[in-house]
Image (cartoon, rainbow, N blue to C red; front, side, top):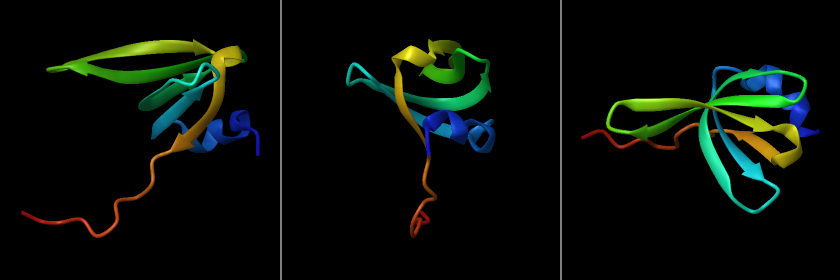
Length: 73
């Protein structure tokens, strides 16, 4: 499945983004247009930024997996 086909299932979900240059980022997938992905990313303290990425720079996107055997403290 091409990553663009995953978008409807991943909207408003935490995702990881792999870029064609070998880097990546993570955040919440807020929106997508024909050419741009909008990801809400954590910066620091209580600050977040809505960043936009052109489709040409993206290699793949993945939803976060569920936590396995969470420890309670």
